[in-house]
Image 1 (cartoon, rainbow, N blue to C red):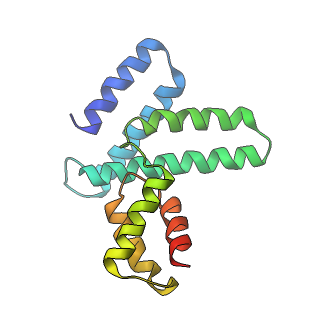
Image 2 (image 1 turned 45 degrees about the vertical axis):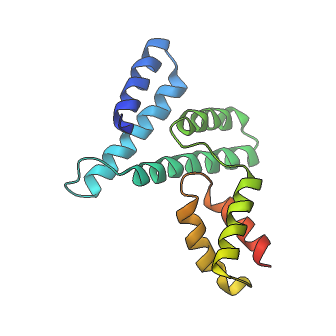
Length: 149
């Protein structure tokens, strides 16, 4: 089942349950999918990788907004953002723990024979491909820095 079909089913369920937070998050996903489909030209369906990147971008936007609201002492605005993050994350693949990401990055470094911070770009490129959708870029970057330094 495509992401669009899953979103439509979940939207129907959220409407029936009168879950406004979930409905808002699902409408945001649907909107982002439609925008991505129209900007990429005549392509009808997004690839699985593009869908994952799109969902990760939506999660990151909401987490950033929640952090800003929290810094400004506005928990009333931060809570709905975090609730939307939980709804959007249902459609992402299971996220790896930091220990699992560290093990995968260590394996990439060992296999490639990388050493020193000069190789960070190469390691990041390889790690981002291997861990696509399973870990966010910030976590990967922090672990790569830690292991290369």
